[in-house]
Length: 318
Image (cartoon, rainbow, N blue to C red; front, top):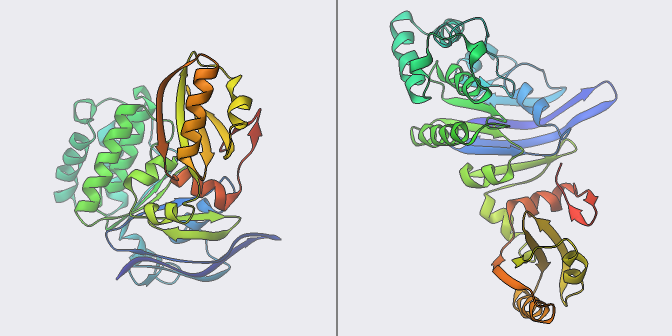
């Protein structure tokens, strides 16, 4: 059984075609990443799959239930964690969680036990009686995730779950996602963090301009652009002036400045390594580190979306 099946979904807002003939499925127990630039159709897709917005055409099925015709039955199967934390600042963490449990019709005999388990899981049990207004952004995000899990869903929608969070909250949320999938929960994840999708998703779909550009496992997607290999090198002393000089090396198609390192895109890493070594000797600079890198999920994203604005020779993803 598929947890989600999108069948020829289209959505128009006036003359704007936000989604065009979108087709995909998510297997039960899978962690499925949904990537795309701003305005690509990610939010519209989630709103349709969760029954908030009706499609103009096509069908969305949740565990074989039509989200339009059987909305209540389908939504009972899911938990939803929106990008913006939907907590009430004047309520305590405990009362927020109990309120969410009531909305999901969690029986009284279950909700308190479930609430304690979730607050302990997210490191919030000792703060359960504190008003949420004094919580950090990361704590609010963890509470929002707990509220989305209070009904013990079979399917969890996560919209940018780790956006702008501290390292501790990021790690907790990633660990929870891993534990959920081990328990057979299906996770549908939208994120701008491409490395996050690479680490935790079984498959990813890349949507661009309202259409699915590709769907596959991260590793298989990387193999589709195997020619995008690179050499990453760091020098002492570092200098932005090296960009143009490194671009001039044989068989280097592009150079990106990434932190304190330079990434040289090439189809022939061995030749580029020789060129970098000769460059360092000629200009009397020391190579701190140098390694070859295969194509990344970010490279796939760039290639399929074309979202590559240039700033002073450096490629940036919006």
